[in-house]
Each structure stands twice: as structure tokens, then as C-alpha cells.
Length: 90
Image (cartoon, rainbow, N blue to C red; front, side, top):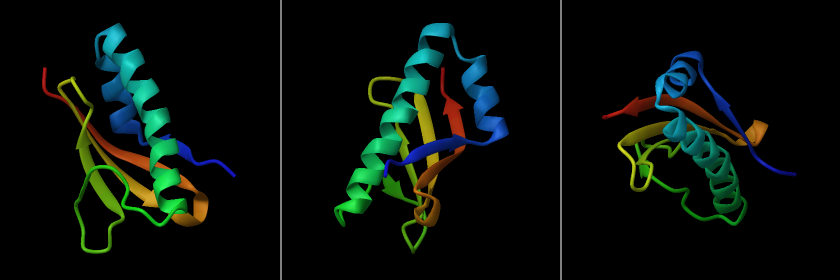
């Protein structure tokens, strides 16, 4: 069973406000991130990004080569990552 990505309303609006090419690239990155996070968790490995809490449910990372920071929450029981924050530094 695969993992999914869900994005909260405010970060979704942030993606829509990005320049079109960056918005498309960011959306593709978020889809790939769900696969990468899920694969890491399924294999008992550390998910990508820097942990932001003591239990390892919330992580932060920068989209490689882009001025975009993403914070996500791992929802294991739903096999989902939820994008809680997306910030464009441009």
C-alpha cells in the first residue's frame, strides 16, 4: 500500500502563489516526498529532513536547489504525510 500526501489550506495557497514553474516543481516534489517518507518508515529508517519534535512526527526540509522550506507531519496510521507549512523565501 502506498503513502499519500495531503496539504493543509494555507500551504496549498502558498503553492498556488508560487511562479508557475516553481509551483509545478514543488507539487511534484511533495508527491515524491510522500513516497520517500513512506519507504523510509516502512523500512524502519529515518525519514528525510530535520526532526522538529521529540517523537519524530514533524520534520522540516528545504526543496533541493529551490528557496522553499517544507514542514510535514507523519501520520503512520493513515500512511500519509501532511504538509503543514510551505514557505517561499523568494
